Image (cartoon, rainbow, N blue to C red; front, side, top):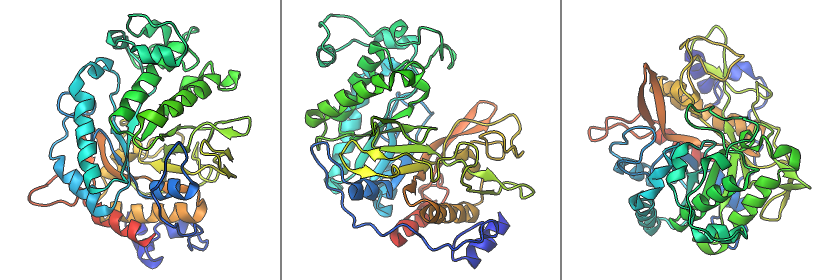
Length: 422
């Protein structure tokens, strides 16, 4: 990463300049920052004000006993960090990966609501994002279907639990993909019923944004039907948001390799999210750069249309994040034909960088995206699970390291400076 550091200094903080000789002047116009929205309408300026202050804080709103990614120690310092850097969009803050019966524990969502309410006493503009992922397991059979969910779908109210078998794809597509879990088929009413019930419960707890994971993976029987399943579900979620969400609005996104789903000229999601898709620099171990058209990277490719808020765009706004999906069998080895970054997922790669080089990459990536595609924003890394190998995991924490918080990787000051300079 020494080469990147030298380039960063030579190009006023824009790393990897030797790989790209073009003018580094940002193309993105400055935002007139505003965080006001209501009644299902979020202007482009407000949406981008939030996306430009987005940070991944995986499971920040979860509590003891309901973590999917292992222990989460010293969480109080994360709240301090969020206030210090000026975060506005707190990504992936509430979810469970499988183990659906966790939602039977009243403390799961009530504890999250208490944390959200406390945070809003200091900053009422904060948006917290929950996640509903591309997995269901037979454990979902232990959750009762509330009467209001049946009513929202015009179905007879009955006393029963959700049915795993009625959520999986009838042709077996995605069944067993996650071991004892499967990819839910969004075209099936039972899947929509389950997602709707989770979304409303999230919103009642104070969640104002929902990430739906790999939405196209779940559309195995929906894409050929003009995405009728996703259209129906999102319409119902937005409708109930008018009364269930704190500002009558919910922002919906998902990972979309197609860079956006458009139906009859209308974008189904408020914005697109996707992995960073950094590319290994051959011959320079553990170094990386961003490139348009590398693998399935979405830079410059998001689709346009009429947004759920009613305004039009030629290209949808989006965020890219440091994704997590584990380690390859060849850590430290470059392979530009797979999604690993020197054998690691993106957050695992960043975790293994020396502090100065990690900070230089954040500066470079933020500036590169602003210049190459002003529709995109870098979702900063804050807290996320990291695979260490041999079944061991830890958490990446961007916080400033101190005697009272030795876990920090020291990106906090850099993130704050990047945002201050935007």
